Image 1 (cartoon, rainbow, N blue to C red):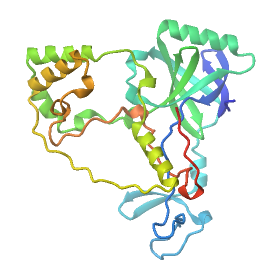
Image 2: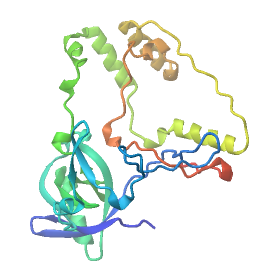
Image 3: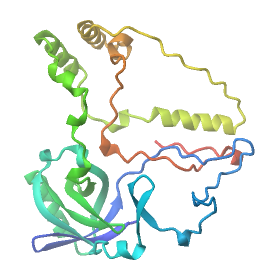
Image 4: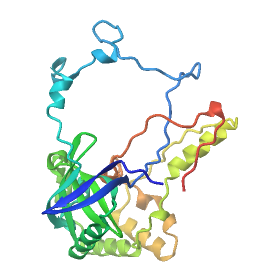
Length: 309
């Protein structure tokens, strides 16, 4: 049974909807411990004074903000506590906006909201009204002693709360010098028409089950094989140099491959990025997320890592 991580109420106007907050996502990155390559023992980290080399007890550690190299202003815990937002346990909706106005780059982490005892009717009213109007509620909530900007939106039969980045946390793309060459580049009408055809031929309905973390599955398989005592021979991979493709030829080859039902066999030259360019990363809303630390599986324990479907 799911366990609520927060309880409170949605407040808009004079209406209060009592709710509980639940996690909506469960990142499944493979996590590792740091070990000594010689002994296989776990690595321990110590907090050391850089000027004396002596270990510093946790209770003697304070926070400091770096003003310039090696120049800090020290902040006492009591000073920060005085600035902590008041934990009101209320999601304060300040306004409703069209969902299309919010770029996904602002979304951070998503949670589910469920009604508490006696709140089902008000919850249903808000869910249906937001769905019919196509609106998203913007407000603030205090989670883990931190005030968060948040979006309240309907997702099928549940209200979702997504924490958001503030405007000054999103970087403007005009800081990228390389975009200047894009403004100067011009595609011909024929190239644009073929690109549209290629996009249309590869279009379909989004089905998240079609997409799997192949890298994670290969890592788990590697762990299982090594835990079973198998010796793994690693072959170095050498990237084959290919000339930058002709754009028109690449479009024609890609369309031909899709029409023949072999889109997975599109010539490598038509897939290759221009030399020196990196392929794009997935959207930041998936940020987060992004984080690997310690692991739960150790070969010494002969425990097979759990696979997730």
